[in-house]
Image 1 (cartoon, rainbow, N blue to C red):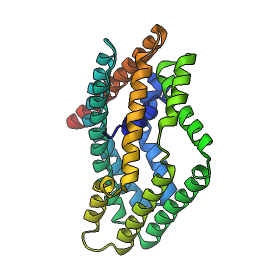
Image 2 (image 1 turned 120 degrees about the horizontal axis):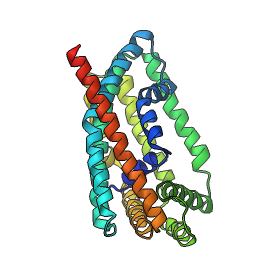
Image 3 (image 1 turned 45 degrees about the horizontal axis):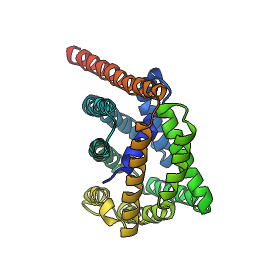
Image 4 (image 1 turned 60 degrees about the horizontal axis):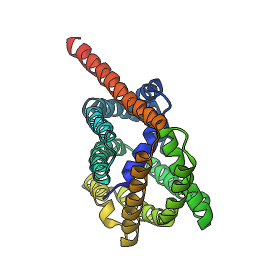
Length: 290
């Protein structure tokens, strides 16, 4: 099962501190994405205007089509709390997240492909150079860690995630996270190698821009998991299982105080989605009547 995505998405949503923060950040998603894109390539005025239009369309799709689906599996997650979360229930939710992530990726790639069609050779080289710079930075910061530091970092990341969800942890919960984080397979080197192979393939496609190059990039994205070396795939699967089982056990060990906090958090996300989709519906109605 592809349960690493469950951890990543939980990590994302639990970094938000309040309902108003959730809505504010979501409503500023276009700005954050533009900032991120600008780190990779500088667009001219015409390119920027076209990118902004496509981004607005992408976000409108996400708000109207995806947020209601997120609401469904958050409601489902709330329902699992009543009698204790089972690993099987957690797997179902994680698989729903996998499907949502695939939909997001497919739509976002189309946005990027349409933008890439207008890039000059110089802009493409700037983009590829930035990818390589990020790759080098990752190696300098992450690959130099010894085993003790790697697993300490893994435990801290997991502990911070669970604390955002449940609040302050007790001694037993903290100890369990620290101990079971040692069961993770170290993947930073394999991730770095996998991304290097993907980057090399992407460079070849973008530099050549042969007829049908867009299809090649779509295929590169769709088959990325299949192209990974067996050791990396096994590590992803193993770590996903470890993380999901740990999350289930920690959630089931929650105190009454932690239970109230977690419910407030999930219910707050549902309220945020309701408010965001209501605003989207209102905007659509104004446009239709205008």
